[in-house]
Length: 270
Ligand code: ADP
Image 1: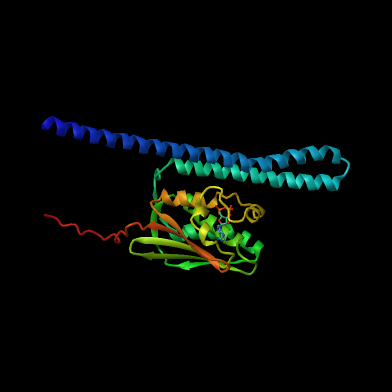
Image 2 (image 1 turned 180 degrees about the vertical axis):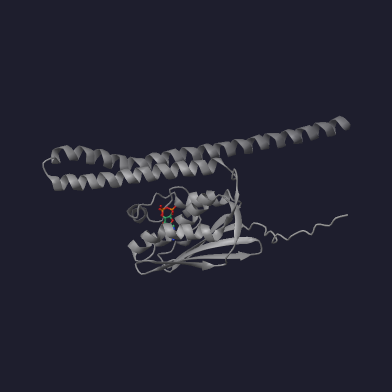
C-alpha cells in the first residue's frame, strides 16, 4: 500500500521534474534563437552601409581629377559613416539595456525637465520637416529614474512622430498623472501603423516600411530601445494608431510618492 503510493508519487514528481527540464530547455533554445536572430540582423544591417563605404572609397581614386565627383562621393561617405556610427551606438545601447532588468541608481526626477530636454533636442528635426511641435499637461510630476535614459526614450518617440508625419503636421507631447501612474503621450497625425504590425514595432529591426525607415535614417532599433528603457523603470510603453490618421505612443511610469512639504518641528524642552 504505502510503497505503491510512494512509487506513484515519485513517478509523478519525476514527470514533473522532466517537464520542468523540458520547459527550461525550450526557454534556453528560444533565447538562443533570439540571440542568433539578433546577430543575423546586425550583420544584415551593417552589410549595406559597409558595402556602400567600400564602393565609394573605390570610386574616389578614378574620380580624383573631377572635384565635383570627389565632393559628391565624400559627402556620401560621410552619410554612410554617420549611419554606421548610429547603428553601432544603438546596438550597444540596446544590449546594455537588455542586460540590466532594473536601474542601478535611480534618482528623483521632474518629468517636466525630461520632456523639455527631449523637445529641445527635436526642434531642429521638426523645423526641417515642417512639423509643429508642442508640449503640455500636468506639471511638477516626479518619478524615480535615469534622466538621460528617459530623455532618450521620449526623444525617440518624438523623432518617430516627426519622421512619420506629413509636412505641416502637428506633434504633441502630453504629460498626465493619474492614480500613481505618470503617462507621457506622444501624438502625431502621420501615416499610422497597420493593426497587424502594432505589437511588432517594438521588436528589434522591425519596420513597417523598410524603404521609408531607411530614408529617414531609421535603424529599426528606436522603439526597442524605448521599450527596454521604460521596462527598466518598472513601466511600459503602449501604442494606439489609426491607419492614415496618426499614432499615439504612451510611456507609463510609476509616480514617485509625493513627500509632504517639510514642516518645522517644534522643539519641546522637558
Ligand atoms: P525606425 O528607426 O525604423 O523608425 P523604430 O524602432 O523607431 O525604427 O520604429 C519601428 C517601425 O515602427 C518604424 O520603421 C515605423 O514603420 C513604425 N513607426 C514607429 N513610430 C511610428 C509613428 N509615429 N508613426 C508611424 N509609424 C511608426
